[in-house]
Image 1: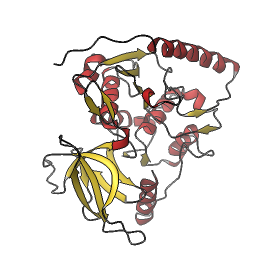
Image 2 (image 1 turned 45 degrees about the horizontal axis):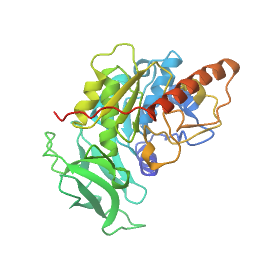
Image 3 (image 1 turned 90 degrees about the horizontal axis):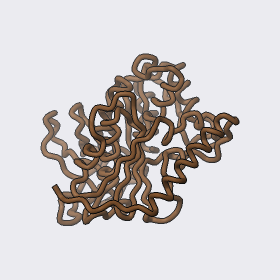
Length: 336
């Protein structure tokens, strides 16, 4: 998020505004304080990772606030992770704000912004972008030569990202449009398909949208994809079908959960340190077997007795689920 942070600072300076740094990785500005800063200052723009306005929105609701009504935010600049269309729609409704996708890196700065139609257009005035074949499919490796950087110019820099070219956009912008699939190193092989971070996030977000929610966590298991979703107040569709439709031929299990099982907003107020949030965990890579947003986000919360009891209950249920997942396998699914 270094590039968006610098860009927001420059935009604010140019327009006579003020940028307020309030990152979840900063000890002094956890999510509750960031929400309060947005409310007190009447901030109009929020620049963040895609999951962060989800967390802030859930925190606002817990405090009796409606992000669309009680906050002045009218624009969300989101980047740094996959931003599938279903999540964009959900955030636009929750915040009553325009969602703009940003794409770039610390090395290259800005490489792309989305238009009103939702297509991410490459910033060809700032960089010469090459889409090199990356296999038999439509995916391509993005290699860039910067044009607008003076201090650290780059020549044919391999971003490590794979993209999927889009057809000409109805907005009329002639710049090429792409879907950023994510890091090639983070792709997973499952049921004969190669799945990218964008694919995994899209499946999780689609299932969450069907359950009137934006809180989801995706676990890559040896034999299937597990999509865990906190259920909202007014489900509208079948989450299993919504997720499976995004990943045809892949075995997908959707696990609806009560609110608070994946994201404990109360714990965010008491944790001394909060890390960059994640919504996908690949158990096949080794390391910690994360099952919730909390487990990958919060370091050693210090709860009250009541909060500790709720945390213990969630932890026991999650541990039981983790053990059962290690024992049970789903039968193969037929291709549609």
